[in-house]
Image (tube, rainbow, N blue to C red; front, side, top):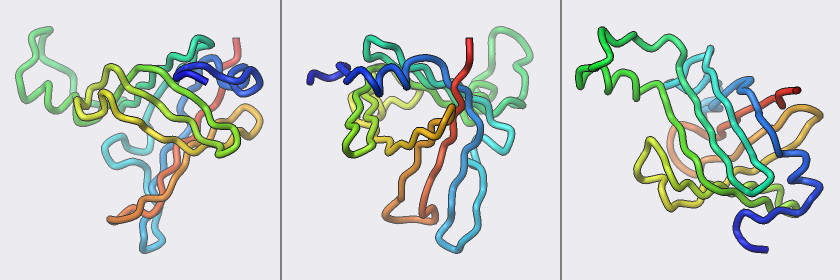
Length: 150
């Protein structure tokens, strides 16, 4: 199957818009916390299209307002520190329960052209993306999304 092509059952289940429910990092010392750069009230949207394209946006909702439409460099840095997004294509490996995102545009330049592997579980109207981290303070990250009904 070419990149972006999907098998029908999973494509039908994923296709549409998902709203962020929560982000969580489980630390190696047993504590948990929301993603530090987004906070506990993070907002986000994830869209999977039937044609194999995807887009995701995550943000900290209470970032400081700019004083005008012409933001200062400091205001731009502050806004970007609580925001991330990328768009591109995706494919699903149903046997491995793995969605791979292929960013073509991203706030983070290093994401462009990369493969972003997202182990997944579908539980009713929820999509749970979660994986372990081999090194560092964080042992596991988890992002929970809920399907937006029409």
